[in-house]
Structure formats: C-alpha cells, structure tokens
Image (cartoon, rainbow, N blue to C red; front, side, top):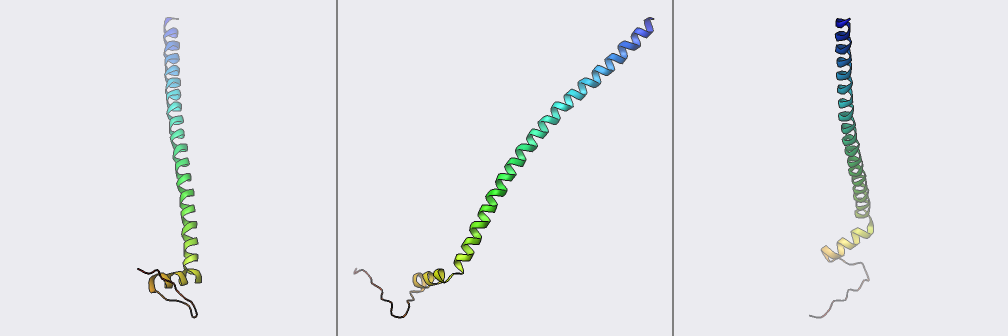
Length: 92
C-alpha cells in the first residue's frame, strides 16, 4: 500500500509538471502571436504607404509625359515661347 501511494504521488507530480510546462509554453506562444500580429500590422502600414507612393510616382510620370509639362519646362528652362505669344518682363 505504501509503494502504491508513492507511485501515485510520482505520477501526480509528473502530470503537474507536464501541465506547468504546457501552461508556460502557452503563455510564450501567446506572446509570440501578439508580436507577430504587431509585425503584420506594421508591414501592412508600410505596404499601404509604398502603394500610395507608387501611385504618386505613376501620376508624376503621366504628368511629365503631358504636353502641359513639356510646355512649362520649355518655357522655364529653355526660354522658348509659342508663336504669337508675348512675354512681359519687369524692368530692373
């Protein structure tokens, strides 16, 4: 009877130890999941920002291919004007 009691206590101790290990690992896993979710949120925000930036770059590319941009650049950088266009300059 005495050895049966020791065996039961040993089994109970092993079960409690395994339960403690499982609970500990569960808490660790929850922490990892929380950090992973934070990282996903951060990467999602970065992706959205980069998509916005890509959109702005594409709009700028389209504008730079337009006649409006070409005319503006020709006037500002090269001093070119259209036929019958008059340019007024301030006296210095």
